[in-house]
Length: 339
Image (cartoon, rainbow, N blue to C red):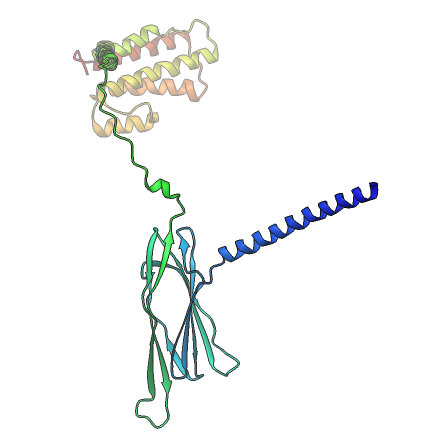
């Protein structure tokens, strides 16, 4: 009994396995039959010339491309003129095209294949228009060496489906919502007015500040004449009490600069940038200073050059005399009006 029971269990198990395999095989074969697209193929011929038009799909979706081939069989000395196409073939866009090198088939005919790759834009019924292929064949003894043979294909319709679900096409847009009143807000305008007022205050402050600064410069510098500036600098210049070499040399450097700046402000001569000889020669040439003042100026500048460049060490009386000569020259050449 036990062996019989085991045999029955195994029999049932193998029957179930067999049924599953049979169902799976039937399902696969039926699926392959359904999904397989035989495409389209048509034959056109005139005499010894044949043209086979083949399309790899008889229907397609907007996400696919189809391949259209024109295979021509002709004599070896026959020329072929293919249809003149640019970017579109009917409603299809020509994505790419190519022409294979001619070859001989088993019947010694020249086989030439031209292939087009086409793609659609939208769903619908696409028509591939008729195409004309011209063959030129040479004949002996005829006046016209080329005998033309024209083969014209038929129109072909290719249905193109959308990849979007059908329910999507039935959807209707929602109604537009009614307009909503925008609440008024004065915060923006308050900020704008505040910024404008702030800019006006800053602008007025800057204008007043620049005007005061300009007036201060005019009152402090422009209103002083050349001799007043020179006298102020002389009053701030201390006469050396110690007869040290560096202190004396620095004194003569400063007093020489004071006089040269005075001459520049008073007569408009660029004295600080010239040597003593250049300056005196220019003064003689321009005849700016009166002859009575020239010996005093020459004597003073020569004394300064001796101390600055010739290491001359004047005494206390010589220093006081140089100081007085500078002041005396300014007094003799000054004017009482502003420059």
